[in-house]
Amino acid sequence: MKLILDPASSTRSFYFNKKDDRVLFGDIRVKESYLLTNGQTIHIEPDEVMDFRAIPYPDETFKAVVFDPPHRIKLTTESDFIKKYGELNKDTWREDLAQGFAECFRVLKTNGTLIFKWSEVSIKLNEILKLTDQKPVLGHPSGKRMGTHWVLFIKTEEDMLQ
Picture 1: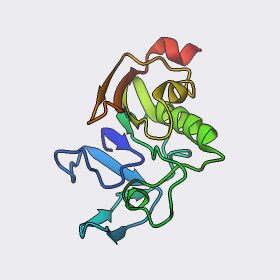
Picture 2: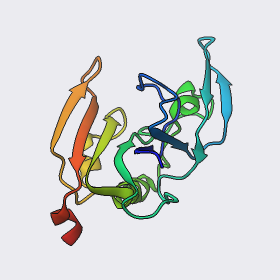
Picture 3: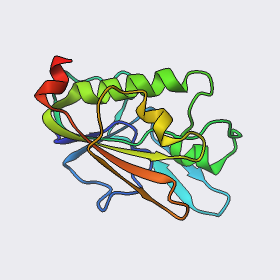
């Protein structure tokens, strides 16, 4: 069994090793390749096709989870961004992300870490953090406009009692 789950891995863009055997790379999309408008070809190649809202693993399976869901809404279907990262449903994004958080914490072992990545292009981070009852430990904004946030959560025994 892999140590780490990334249930929405897309192009694995922030991994040092895009084939790291410690990570189970999942995505709702099957193996796909796209030619972007800049001439770059990208590949979506999940180890396993999965929906982050219904992760097909038992409770407490992984030591760490990386949750980097799509974070944009209202894009055209031809958008390079959709091809690379997918998009949120404009009507159900709150429920989808709340279920995604719940599933990620469900499959995370006690004392395991969840790393959450969010870009505030469409929705502010404070709105997203309201979708989980788990409390983040720390966070850091990055990027040109400091709009991408990395947030760390730890699943403790106390969290399981709530």
